[in-house]
Amino acid sequence: MSTVTVKVPATTANIGPGFDCLGAALTLYNQFAFSPLSDGEALRITVSGAEANRVSTTATNLVYQAFCKLCDRINKPIPAIHLDIQMDVPLARGLGSSATAIVGGIVGANVLAGSPLSPDQLADLATEIEGHPDNVVPALMGGCRLAASGYAETETCRPWEICELSWNANVVPIVAIPDFELSTADARKVLPADYSRADAIFNAAHLGLLLRGLETGNADWLRAALQDRIHQPYRQALIRGYDAVQKGAIAAGAYGMVISGAGPTLLALSDPNQAESVRSAMENAWIARGIGVQVKVLTLDTQGARIS
Image 1 (cartoon, one colour):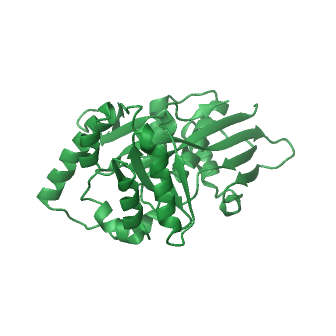
Image 2 (image 1 turned 45 degrees about the horizontal axis):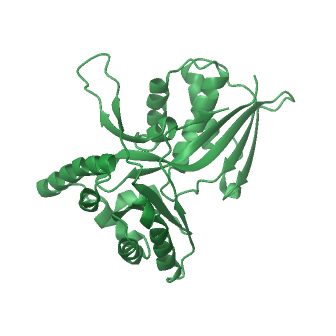
């Protein structure tokens, strides 16, 4: 067994009307290195980077749990490993940090075992661990991906069908990451149990328009398409400064702004010429309210998990 390093991108999920089915990989990464241990230890975990002190260094670590899950799936013994984690994706901010951990763990274990599972099988296992595919699939495969449940009346049907989507190079993602957290569980609690027919139709139409807007870069389509009635109207109140950041982003030229995942990170989409102005406006809006923030102009990651 030699050292295997897996670099996994952050993700943004939902992207407005794509609640629980749409996600995209971004150029921000966590890195996981798996090395053999020969000194009698079964596990050693070291962590560096942002919020490293908050990451478990015991067998409860999510990367290691995913690593063990794959070993169990292929009926292989769990090797003694040194897991070294380099963190750049912040925790509990709506950028898929848990998805990077799951993907890093299963990809690392798969490579060390000789890669017995295909990318589709890895995607299914990652979704099984996470509970839904919108973050783990783009983290694994890269790009922008739409997930829909499979056609269950056939024996060979996969549980999910994953569709890769086109993302125009002139659509620039800008993420504003505040220095406070919002748990996914809390963000779920505020959602209603039922929605009206009008809201369901609204989101179906706007998701279709969003997919075309991302593909073409059509500014008018994107401005309309980023509207949502399923999750954002209920979650906005949980994010301090939301209205001010949105107003600033749009005034600076953004097509629109949405909640990244469950939040509190906010995602704006812009054309390249306005990206820096949008970044500055989002940063200033939160700083003016005494809230620390990192704002990054990113691009779409098209590779997903990288192995070296």
